[in-house]
Amino acid sequence: DSGVTQTPKHLITATGQRVTLRCSPRSGDLSVYWYQQSLDQGLQFLIQYYNGEERAKGNILERFSAQQFPDLHSELNLSSLELGDSALYFCASSSPPGGATDTQYFGPGTRLTVL
Amino acid sequence: GDSVTQMEGPVTLSEEAFLTINCTYTATGYPSLFWYVQYPGEGLQLLLKATKADDKGSNKGFEATYRKETTSFHLEKGSVQVSDSAVYFCALRWGGGADGLTFGKGTHLIIQP
Image (cartoon, rainbow over all chains, first blue to last red; front, side, top):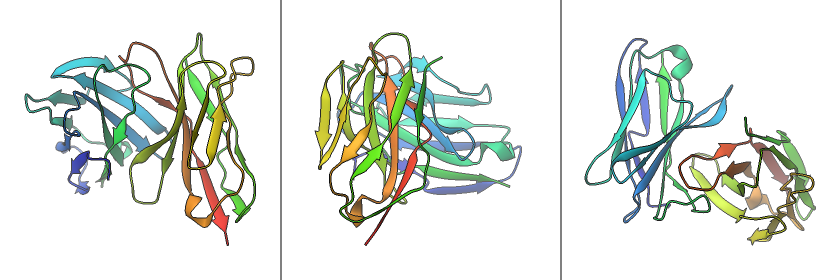
Protein backbone atom coordinates (compact mmCIF):
# COMPACT_ATOMS: atom_id res chain seq x y z
CA ASP A 1 0.00 0.00 0.00
CA SER A 2 1.58 3.27 -1.21
CA GLY A 3 -0.56 5.53 0.99
CA VAL A 4 -2.04 7.26 -2.08
CA THR A 5 -5.78 6.72 -2.44
CA GLN A 6 -7.90 7.19 -5.53
CA THR A 7 -11.65 7.10 -5.97
CA PRO A 8 -13.59 5.68 -7.63
CA LYS A 9 -11.88 2.44 -8.62
CA HIS A 10 -13.98 2.07 -11.73
CA LEU A 11 -16.10 4.52 -13.69
CA ILE A 12 -18.33 3.77 -16.66
CA THR A 13 -19.90 6.65 -18.51
CA ALA A 14 -21.09 7.74 -21.94
CA THR A 15 -19.52 9.93 -24.61
CA GLY A 16 -20.05 13.63 -24.05
CA GLN A 17 -20.30 13.28 -20.29
CA ARG A 18 -18.13 14.83 -17.56
CA VAL A 19 -16.45 12.97 -14.69
CA THR A 20 -14.28 13.83 -11.70
CA LEU A 21 -11.52 11.61 -10.38
CA ARG A 22 -10.24 12.13 -6.87
CA CYS A 23 -6.82 11.58 -5.33
CA SER A 24 -5.56 11.84 -1.76
CA PRO A 25 -1.77 11.99 -1.53
CA ARG A 26 0.37 10.38 1.16
CA SER A 27 0.39 12.25 4.43
CA GLY A 28 2.86 15.14 4.18
CA ASP A 29 3.33 15.00 0.41
CA LEU A 30 2.84 18.37 -1.28
CA SER A 31 3.23 17.31 -4.93
CA VAL A 32 0.51 15.50 -6.84
CA TYR A 33 0.89 14.16 -10.37
CA TRP A 34 -1.71 12.77 -12.77
CA TYR A 35 -0.90 10.15 -15.42
CA GLN A 36 -2.97 8.41 -18.08
CA GLN A 37 -2.25 4.78 -19.06
CA SER A 38 -3.82 3.58 -22.31
CA LEU A 39 -3.05 0.72 -24.64
CA ASP A 40 -2.05 2.91 -27.58
CA GLN A 41 -0.30 5.82 -25.79
CA GLY A 42 1.23 3.97 -22.85
CA LEU A 43 1.82 5.91 -19.63
CA GLN A 44 1.71 9.67 -20.13
CA PHE A 45 2.22 12.50 -17.68
CA LEU A 46 -0.74 14.89 -17.63
CA ILE A 47 -0.17 17.54 -14.96
CA GLN A 48 1.58 18.30 -11.66
CA TYR A 49 0.44 20.38 -8.69
CA TYR A 50 2.62 21.52 -5.82
CA ASN A 51 1.00 22.83 -2.64
CA GLY A 52 -2.10 24.02 -4.48
CA GLU A 53 -0.39 25.57 -7.49
CA GLU A 54 0.00 24.11 -10.97
CA ARG A 55 3.68 23.34 -11.47
CA ALA A 56 4.00 21.51 -14.79
CA LYS A 57 1.85 20.42 -17.69
CA GLY A 58 2.36 17.39 -19.86
CA ASN A 59 0.12 15.97 -22.58
CA ILE A 60 -3.11 17.14 -21.01
CA LEU A 61 -6.01 17.86 -23.34
CA GLU A 62 -7.93 21.15 -23.21
CA ARG A 63 -11.03 19.16 -22.16
CA PHE A 64 -9.22 18.00 -19.02
CA SER A 65 -8.45 20.12 -15.98
CA ALA A 66 -7.21 19.55 -12.47
CA GLN A 67 -6.88 21.31 -9.16
CA GLN A 68 -5.33 20.74 -5.76
CA PHE A 69 -7.25 21.83 -2.69
CA PRO A 70 -5.98 23.32 0.61
CA ASP A 71 -6.11 19.87 2.25
CA LEU A 72 -3.81 18.74 -0.63
CA HIS A 73 -6.22 16.31 -2.22
CA SER A 74 -6.55 16.68 -5.97
CA GLU A 75 -9.27 16.23 -8.56
CA LEU A 76 -8.95 15.57 -12.26
CA ASN A 77 -11.94 16.71 -14.31
CA LEU A 78 -12.55 15.15 -17.70
CA SER A 79 -15.27 16.67 -19.88
CA SER A 80 -16.84 16.08 -23.29
CA LEU A 81 -15.63 12.52 -22.99
CA GLU A 82 -14.68 10.54 -26.09
CA LEU A 83 -14.19 6.81 -26.58
CA GLY A 84 -10.45 7.39 -26.74
CA ASP A 85 -10.42 8.75 -23.18
CA SER A 86 -11.01 5.24 -21.87
CA ALA A 87 -7.89 4.50 -19.83
CA LEU A 88 -6.43 3.93 -16.41
CA TYR A 89 -5.76 7.23 -14.63
CA PHE A 90 -3.09 7.24 -11.96
CA CYS A 91 -2.33 9.77 -9.31
CA ALA A 92 1.10 9.93 -7.68
CA SER A 93 2.52 12.02 -4.88
CA SER A 94 5.98 12.95 -3.63
CA SER A 95 7.51 14.79 -0.72
CA PRO A 96 9.27 18.14 -0.73
CA PRO A 97 11.57 19.46 -2.03
CA GLY A 98 10.00 18.17 -5.23
CA GLY A 99 13.22 17.45 -7.10
CA ALA A 100 13.89 15.17 -10.04
CA THR A 101 15.23 12.41 -7.82
CA ASP A 102 12.14 12.28 -5.59
CA THR A 103 10.28 9.01 -5.44
CA GLN A 104 6.76 9.27 -6.78
CA TYR A 105 4.29 7.01 -4.96
CA PHE A 106 1.45 5.82 -7.16
CA GLY A 107 -2.15 5.15 -6.25
CA PRO A 108 -4.04 2.07 -7.50
CA GLY A 109 -5.67 4.03 -10.34
CA THR A 110 -9.17 4.75 -11.59
CA ARG A 111 -10.28 2.76 -14.62
CA LEU A 112 -12.46 4.92 -16.86
CA THR A 113 -14.59 3.30 -19.55
CA VAL A 114 -16.38 5.57 -22.00
CA LEU A 115 -19.17 3.86 -23.94
CA GLY B 1 11.66 15.36 -27.46
CA ASP B 2 12.73 13.00 -24.75
CA SER B 3 11.88 9.35 -25.12
CA VAL B 4 12.50 5.99 -23.49
CA THR B 5 12.69 2.76 -25.48
CA GLN B 6 12.41 -0.68 -23.96
CA MET B 7 11.64 -4.18 -25.21
CA GLU B 8 7.90 -4.74 -24.91
CA GLY B 9 7.68 -8.47 -24.59
CA PRO B 10 6.12 -10.48 -23.28
CA VAL B 11 9.38 -11.89 -22.01
CA THR B 12 8.94 -15.44 -20.74
CA LEU B 13 11.62 -17.06 -18.57
CA SER B 14 11.91 -20.09 -16.34
CA GLU B 15 12.38 -19.66 -12.60
CA GLU B 16 16.04 -19.05 -11.62
CA ALA B 17 16.94 -17.77 -15.10
CA PHE B 18 19.01 -14.60 -15.62
CA LEU B 19 16.99 -11.53 -16.56
CA THR B 20 17.93 -8.55 -18.69
CA ILE B 21 15.41 -5.95 -19.81
CA ASN B 22 16.97 -3.37 -22.10
CA CYS B 23 16.22 0.33 -21.75
CA THR B 24 17.71 3.20 -23.74
CA TYR B 25 16.79 6.84 -23.67
CA THR B 26 17.01 9.86 -25.94
CA ALA B 27 17.54 13.14 -24.14
CA THR B 28 19.84 16.12 -24.13
CA GLY B 29 21.71 16.25 -20.86
CA TYR B 30 21.60 13.86 -17.91
CA PRO B 31 18.19 13.06 -16.48
CA SER B 32 17.48 10.88 -13.46
CA LEU B 33 16.56 7.31 -14.44
CA PHE B 34 14.07 4.95 -12.81
CA TRP B 35 12.65 1.45 -13.03
CA TYR B 36 9.07 1.01 -11.86
CA VAL B 37 7.17 -2.28 -11.52
CA GLN B 38 3.42 -2.80 -11.88
CA TYR B 39 1.87 -5.98 -10.46
CA PRO B 40 -1.55 -7.04 -11.78
CA GLY B 41 -4.33 -4.75 -10.61
CA GLU B 42 -1.98 -2.41 -8.75
CA GLY B 43 -0.33 0.95 -9.20
CA LEU B 44 3.33 1.42 -10.04
CA GLN B 45 6.03 0.92 -7.42
CA LEU B 46 9.53 2.31 -7.61
CA LEU B 47 12.00 -0.56 -8.01
CA LEU B 48 15.25 1.39 -8.24
CA LYS B 49 16.73 4.64 -9.47
CA ALA B 50 20.00 6.33 -10.46
CA THR B 51 20.54 10.04 -10.54
CA LYS B 52 23.89 10.45 -12.29
CA ALA B 53 26.21 8.70 -14.73
CA ASP B 54 27.78 5.43 -13.51
CA ASP B 55 25.42 5.25 -10.53
CA LYS B 56 24.06 1.76 -9.87
CA GLY B 57 20.58 1.38 -8.46
CA SER B 58 19.67 -1.87 -6.73
CA ASN B 59 16.73 -3.36 -4.87
CA LYS B 60 15.31 -6.86 -4.23
CA GLY B 61 18.08 -8.48 -6.30
CA PHE B 62 17.48 -6.18 -9.29
CA GLU B 63 20.24 -3.87 -10.55
CA ALA B 64 20.65 -1.21 -13.22
CA THR B 65 23.62 1.03 -14.05
CA TYR B 66 23.31 4.50 -15.56
CA ARG B 67 25.51 4.42 -18.69
CA LYS B 68 25.76 7.84 -20.32
CA GLU B 69 28.04 6.61 -23.15
CA THR B 70 25.34 4.26 -24.39
CA THR B 71 22.37 6.23 -22.93
CA SER B 72 21.17 3.03 -21.34
CA PHE B 73 19.78 1.79 -18.03
CA HIS B 74 19.31 -1.97 -18.47
CA LEU B 75 17.58 -3.90 -15.69
CA GLU B 76 19.16 -7.19 -14.55
CA LYS B 77 18.50 -9.90 -12.01
CA GLY B 78 20.59 -12.99 -11.49
CA SER B 79 17.83 -15.46 -10.61
CA VAL B 80 14.17 -14.62 -11.19
CA GLN B 81 11.23 -15.97 -9.22
CA VAL B 82 7.60 -16.55 -10.18
CA SER B 83 6.73 -13.59 -7.94
CA ASP B 84 8.74 -11.29 -10.25
CA SER B 85 6.07 -11.68 -12.93
CA ALA B 86 4.85 -8.14 -13.61
CA VAL B 87 5.17 -5.24 -16.05
CA TYR B 88 8.41 -3.26 -15.76
CA PHE B 89 8.67 0.38 -16.84
CA CYS B 90 11.83 2.35 -17.48
CA ALA B 91 11.45 6.11 -16.97
CA LEU B 92 13.38 9.37 -16.89
CA ARG B 93 12.90 12.72 -15.24
CA TRP B 94 14.67 16.03 -15.46
CA GLY B 95 16.14 18.12 -12.71
CA GLY B 96 14.19 20.89 -11.07
CA GLY B 97 11.23 18.70 -10.24
CA ALA B 98 8.81 20.66 -12.40
CA ASP B 99 7.84 17.82 -14.65
CA GLY B 100 6.51 14.31 -14.67
CA LEU B 101 8.15 11.03 -15.50
CA THR B 102 8.61 10.02 -19.15
CA PHE B 103 7.95 6.29 -19.39
CA GLY B 104 8.82 3.56 -21.84
CA LYS B 105 6.02 1.32 -23.10
CA GLY B 106 6.62 -1.31 -20.42
CA THR B 107 7.92 -4.88 -20.58
CA HIS B 108 5.62 -7.70 -19.54
CA LEU B 109 7.67 -10.35 -17.74
CA ILE B 110 6.28 -13.85 -17.21
CA ILE B 111 8.21 -16.30 -15.02
CA GLN B 112 7.24 -19.96 -15.31
CA PRO B 113 7.87 -22.43 -12.48
